[in-house]
Image (cartoon, rainbow over all chains, first blue to last red):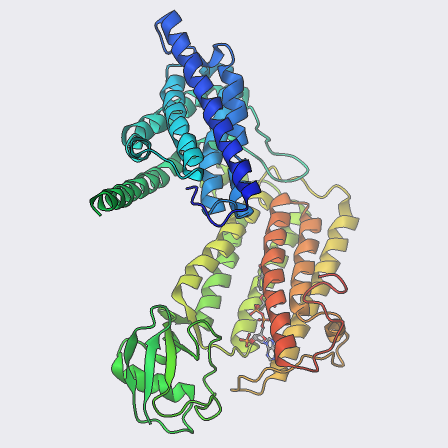
Length: 228
Length: 304
Ligand SMILES: NC(=O)c1ccc[n+]([C@@H]2O[C@H](COP(=O)([O-])OP(=O)(O)OC[C@H]3O[C@@H](n4cnc5c(N)ncnc54)[C@H](OP(=O)(O)O)[C@@H]3O)[C@@H](O)[C@H]2O)c1
């Protein structure tokens, strides 16, 4: 994603700072999660453990800066696709888990949180080292391999979380704006969540196979370089 | 004479077109090229002088383009084409049918007793305005517009239709909903909006007639549009595309009259789209005509 163009050294410094910051943020989440597991011998209840919730909210929301990076041309990738990907996570973070306390203690929270954490640590440290032109082979390999299992697990966790939130959304009518009203438009959060869940059906395979394609390209490129 | 045709994207040679003379036009080249590639009918073809330069007009002659025997032309496939009339008829008939389907309040959408509930006056007037607008556009497509392109890419039909059909359903669902709330300021808002709507529709129609009169039947001529005796066309003094200005005005009026947020969103989307087009047309006018009136803006007088 973060292909480097001709960046000014200021932009480079900023991006380095950003990626290091994100790596540290997600590493803290990983550390606290492991601590939670060691103490309770369970992955349930992660969300309420110490600062995990806060860190998740801060660093996941900060990721919106990546859309800005694309728009400003700091990073060469499609801003729209980046925005869609980040939106789905920010939506889950704030729109579901934060908004509906009933789901916070579910096992499925760990099911998306841990894969997110691992992927992000690898991804951001990859970007940071890439800016310094010193990515070790094993990190590249991790970046283009871990997703094969982490991505489906994470997506299942996200879907389970949204699915278990549905009854509460219906019951509390949260964020729902019914007719009749003076604007003559209604907003039904329940329907929106269902539509977002359905959107995984076309999007997940698309992204997954895109990544598989990337993996082939990058790893093949690397092995060819080695042989030279 | 003989001309080499190269692929605009890759620069690879696609073959040599023969049987041309300096007086031959690009259209002749297209017809000759078709003999090499049977599936590429002339409307699908586009030629340019450089890989990335502007598409050449059908009427341009090789002599005028300084192309001599052994010269080169770059070719681009525009993809499968459909006639403009077909495109517009599908685009505009859709919203008409969809809107009226919601107007009768089918039980599967609004529940069993919805159809028999009384409709607010605004709902009836809105249905009349909507129907009038799209019927007008259909009739204009067939009887008024003189398009310069016979066809457009088939993909556009899908893109445009989903835009028009989707928005029609979105707007119609809420205006025809049994729980619709009539405009807050009552008759003033309703009839004021209606009057403004009719005014803008008349304006839009007048501009379309003016465009028609600028272009002799069967030609593709493009002239500088000027205000005529019809006062509605005086807007040409300030903008290049007053038909879009009036179109936006009509939808603003419709939104005010119905006090419906989806209608306003439709207006905003249309405004954005028409502004982009108007800016393009404005730029083309200025490029094509050295004496193009200064002080005109693309779509909004003095502003945009
Ligand atoms: N609600 C919405 O979202 C929306 C969006 C777009 C349009 N519309 C409506 O649809 C109508 C038609 O749209 P359009 O984009 O086709 O309009 P347009 O490009 O302005 O053209 C209308 C007709 O006039 C011709 N024409 C334009 N300028 C001319 C000139 N200088 N000399 C000679 N002929 C000229 C055009 O020929 P060419 O074939 O050569 O262009 C075309 O046949 C609009 O006026 C508007 O009412 C609505």
